[in-house]
Image (tube, rainbow, N blue to C red; front, side, top):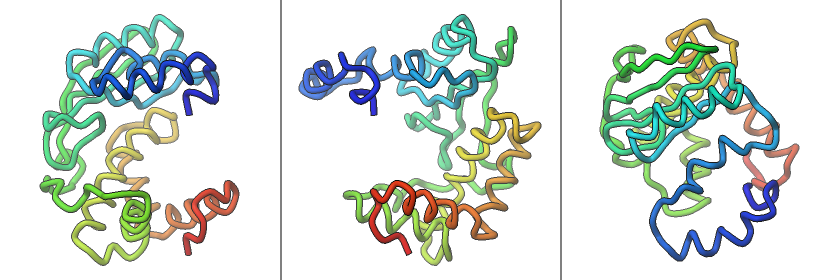
Length: 195
C-alpha cells in the first residue's frame, strides 16, 4: 500500500526488493501512516527495534501502541514461541513477554501455516474463520485470535490483552469474523468469490 500513499515509495520499492535484505523502509510505514492513527499494533523483524520504535511512535503522538517481535523471528505474536512486547500507553513504556498459554492457547509449531500463494492463503483463512476442519486451520485461527486480540486491545475495545484475545476467539467461533471477511471482500471486490 505504501506506493499509493507515499509517492517516493514507488521509486524506493524496486531498489529495496533488489537488495533482498530488510532496510529502514520496513519500519518507516507505521511512522509515516497518512491516516494519522494513534493506536497501532506493529510487528518488527528485529527484537532490538521494539523499544526504539515504541519511543519514536510515542514522540509522534501515539496514544496506545504495541510493538511485537517473537522469539522465533516473526514480526507478529507467535503461536510457537514467546513474544516480546513493548507497550506504549500515553507517557508510559512497558516491556514484557507473552506466550500463547497466557491466553489459554496451546503453543504449537508453525508447520502448515506457510502458504505458496494467494489461493493457498485464502483457503487457509477460510478454514481458520470457518469450520477449522484442518490442523492448519485450527492453528491459523489461534494465530489470528492472538494478533486480532492485541489489535482489539490497542483499539480500546477491550481493557486487557486477555479480554481482546477472548473477543477475537468469540468472533471466530461464532462465525462473525468469517462474515466480516465476506463483507469486506464484497465491498472491495478484490478477493473474488469468498463463499
